[in-house]
Image (cartoon, rainbow over all chains, first blue to last red):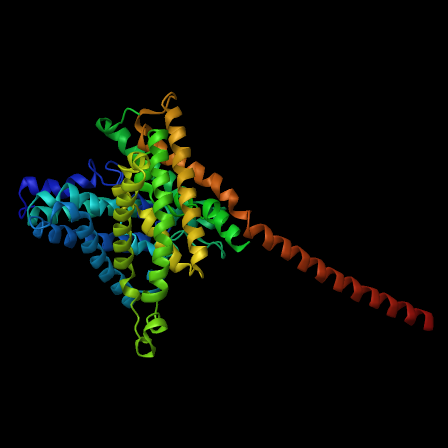
Length: 215
Length: 242
């Protein structure tokens, strides 16, 4: 990272692990769980959030000195809503099928707590470049969890990755299905998303004892 | 009947927390004590009941394709403002929350004291915006039904946060593996509760469908039996002739 100073690169790297927005800061859970039945949807969601967070943090940081603090929440919501409308329209234009599947959840990026949380905690008090890095870092940290959950749910639930049959064909009984392997359809249902995230938290905290909560 | 069905459906089958994961952030953050959970839950019910019908009106008369034509005359009928729905809904929610806060403070200070801290939090609760967006995507036909939908979803959310808060108060005395303590175990409990709530799925629609299929099957069997009878009669007559 020759481009970034040590302090700046920390802004990007911290949220990926020890200060992860989902598993540690508990922000942005809603969409992380609802759309992760497929890897493709997780990736699209990550890119959307990356865009909204990066640009949104920059905008808020630019106008941070002129927003009256009493109405700052409405101003922030308006900025995010405008950015999300751009994402939604682009998705509708280039990938209509996917935008149908994601449905209301693209709109719910507006109230994704990660975005409001980072605006409040970081962009309102920091300069342009650092806010941008913080936005990118947190969106990537969010994306990492989304992609891990999406990977396992799609692989174990329907035996595919991004739609490719990596485990063989379940009907023609090729690949691992020839040995009697069955897809676990339960992984596609809503409750398993919660349990998979629970397990990720478990693994992360057993590796880093400093993160353990006392009840 | 329609209203009652939607009411129970939005509480149990399409429960905000367990089926669509809406409002998870505050659900996880404010569920450490039952008393605060009750306060936030009540505020969510209140705001959902107000905002869903208001957004329904906005959707019907401004946002839908051709909606402007209904009351502004034919020349506006070709406008499609549905791309503005996110920004309209969130603006309505933010202002309604502010308005509700002012009204409640004025008329019922005791309610304000118990809800007060939570009201600003609610503007950014995904359950509220989610309620409006699902109302739009599920095309709820009348304002009465949208009111019922808001009420039902709110009560469903209230039930969920009340249940998890009660469990979290008790789990303090259990021997949870250290790395799972706090957030991890809460996720897993919520997952198990969601599995439990899935069993409500057959309550309204699933049961009916099965019953219909059974009667259909029975009808088909009857027809076949009659055919068999006719065959037997024919066979017998042929034998008799022989």
